[in-house]
Image (cartoon, rainbow, N blue to C red; front, side, top):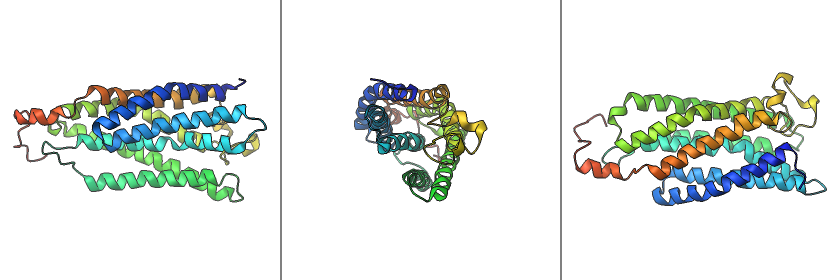
Length: 271
């Protein structure tokens, strides 16, 4: 096997996410909530995307479609991770009576995140077409929307901490987990922005495609693999480990048993 640095990182991605995928499936089966299901989707995307990139380097003559598919999954994988975080924050709004607050707002934000994903995918799929300009615009708009969604997640998290006295015990611990993960997710989102704006085409083929040479080192394909490792892979993996650990250790169902013993009396009318 003769893999370059990106190929080796892709193989490592498959190796580290393959076992996490099964842990995520167990958590999703336990809670059957959207957030944990999105965590499963994200880990699956990473396994499949990494496998495509490894195959792309091993198959000769080269198959461009494998590269595009692998890097497309790499670029769009941020969406399910952000939406997973959004869903986990929604769980923290759950009242002692089982009601999830702000359903409409969270639904709109999920549609917003999916819209950003669609724009990104369409922009990537048009990479080899003649409409390079529109493809570039859609990719950049998509990643900007990802950044906006992250900012909204941060605002929601701060808002939840302001009203933390109204949050049930284990859901408050879930809020802690999300809060710890947010800085890592911020670096990952920043990398997507820098990588997308580092080139005018999805897959670069030389310095002429670079729209800003100062950002060239952040390019997902031709940039420095050390930056990709530090700002992309490690940031994602830490975030996923935090959510997986929270899913296994937090006893969210116990909040309602505590309610039976009046630990969360319903006199809190604000909830």
